Length: 115
Length: 114
Image 1: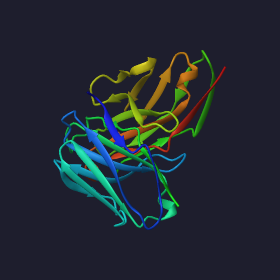
Image 2: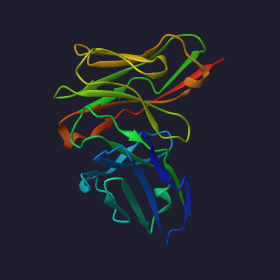
Image 3: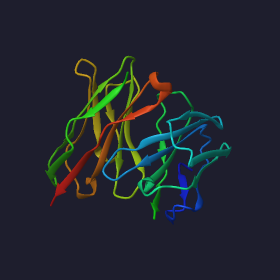
Image 4: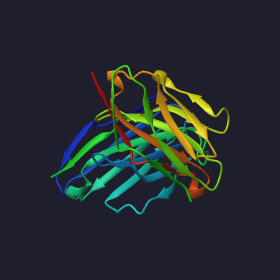
């Protein structure tokens, strides 16, 4: 199984809502990532988890809260978002943290719209 | 510090003609380099990677890339474009600096004309 799955595929939420994005992989990867991608732009790194511990937070606003309950699962909790947070949110995983030779496997993304 | 520059924001080719997508990189250490493809509203898929083994790297769907250290380049090529190749392509560098983060190029949109 070389697949990263993400749910939901689409999400529309109001600025006062609380919602969560979910990402799952069963490849035994020990590094997991959240990216934000705006239209016609490359993905921007948000968070990196290494062996289930948060190792990189790219100065992301606190209205985004990541969680890694176990080595296969990664969540992104959303609260009080702004319309400019509307984007495609991509999850990725790689075999070993801090190893430049391993490629990242990407999920299909969650298309988030904040109204 | 590391950086990656994709020299063309858009490339347009006719079906059956060669494809060349250009990428230059900068890295203080010997880098790993990757090309990913993204079709509309999809995630990214790895095309190929260079990790200090053979300098000519073959990937999926007939794509290949050559690592040229003297030119700090890692250009992506394909002998004959197919309509299904129309997509966004990202060149990515990964190395020791920045906590092993991957650095994405700005992307090149490939258009394929019938």
